[in-house]
Image (tube, rainbow, N blue to C red):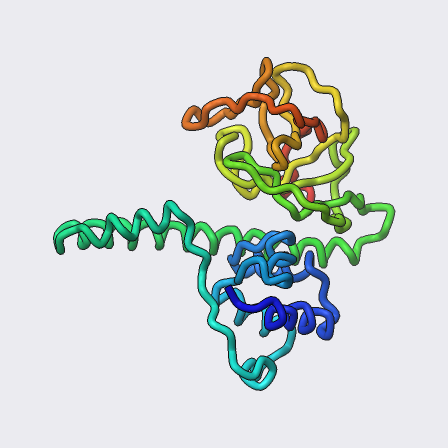
Length: 264
């Protein structure tokens, strides 16, 4: 782990550039690099480190071209390797050349697939940003301003909850009645009802009926799931229901997808 004092300079660069953490997160996601706001805060506190590609893009966004002169000795940047990843590496080293070739082939195919998916999501975000720029030129009476939280709500393995301030999202079409805010779906456990990257309208409420889909805070994480009997239910059969924990709280009722028609 790099010393915290070195990584304090990430925050220093951001402040000098006049950027907010949500703006940095939005920029990185627009070019296909996943970085939630709480992750960026962690980098600035030295709790974790960005990849070298992410670090370079952040410097570019901050307008810092000569990284060597800014940092002096450039710190070593590496991904944090989890326990499961270490186990995969150990297993890989035990393979014979044929086994390694087979694994490498699968990695190549999956890497291309994931990169294509990231490129697709980046293109969608760029298009939405362009549509928002056009919407800003529309008369105020024709625009509907809704708070958008960039922190994703998981339809998968859970997204760590953190305090985040929303940004106003401008829509050309009236949102569903009762909409309180918009949030982003992360993961595929609610497919085919909701897909990874979908923006969804949410009505803030603490009361839901069984069978309704809502946003929940549970076990320190944010979820979008169907409310079951003492459990949260996924629509993707690959995911088992998640039993309630003592700290479960309902954040709101999901009203539907904020699709492209709201920007036209």
